[in-house]
Amino acid sequence: MQVVQLSQYGDADVLEVAERPTPQPEAGRVRVRVTARSVNPADLGSRSGALAVMVPDLAFPAVLGWDFAGTLLDDAAVAAGVTAPDAPADTLPAGTRVAGFVPWFGEAAGDGSYAEVLVVDPTWVAPVPDGVTDAQAAVLGMNALTGAHAADLVAELAGGLDGATVLVTGASGPVGAAAVRDAVGRGARVLAVGSADDDAFVAGLGAEVLPRTDAAGIAAAARAAVPGGVDAVFNAGLASHELLDAVRDGGVFVSATRGYMPEAARGVVVDGVHVEPDAPRLASLLRDAADGTLPARVAEELPLAGAADAHRRLADGGLRGKLVLVS
Image 1: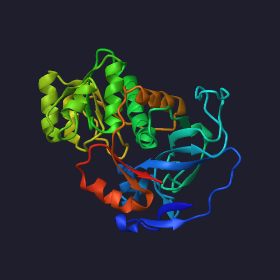
Image 2: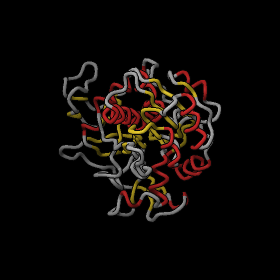
Image 3: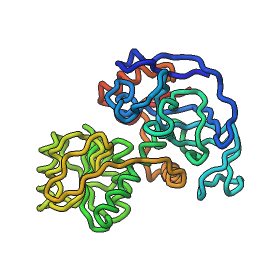
Image 4: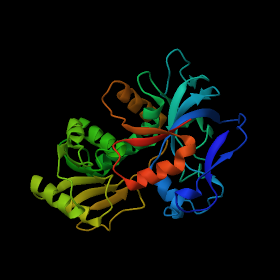
């Protein structure tokens, strides 16, 4: 099978296409023939070494990639609550279209989804419904789940979301969009900032759109909209301590990555979301994508062998939607 791997940290040129033996069945695991995987900022940070502290024991050569979509090669005894039509309640049969993600900063470090066949814990996968393409499912595999888990964390720290005011940055990306939709659905008033020219998209999620500017300007705009400060910030798109100024005293600040969290002040609780595989929640998110209530935007599909070019394009910015590597 084909994989894209790196033997050292560096720029996109360290990514190389290689051949590896196709994995054989393993007890307690399931194989997925991967047809799509999205390219995430964490991939770029992992490749460059910027996030090396998250995987101190990484062995080279390593295969990048978090989320995936494809087809089961083996029957999967899945997580409770995950079912597929015409299948036993606890099983997804071989041939089922599935999506999921591997915990690359955990037990799956170095064994990511930039491969044609992936071996995973069966409880990491959820069925992909009709109406959702493999590329769209790959966009949601980790990203939408991160946004949903972030909304959970904000709700937990803030004592609920009904009636709360929440500021979300990066709202036009799949992480921020999922968080906005979830928070709005729980009764929060959501202020949001997305990418340039994406105001209509963000407003369509149910948020009040703030001007896109620097962190200090966004914090000031939030303070103008909510005198005294918002109850919570979910930072899915910026990395500046000045966003903390948008939060009221004693409020909540949640970051999309534990790699960036500002120093707490004024009694504000600061935390980072730590996403873990959650097949039942992902199955629900995929159903939402199928019925059109959760967007999954794909900027372009590129071949798996074009991973280096995809990394360069993501680093250049300006994309509306995710780059997805297909095979």
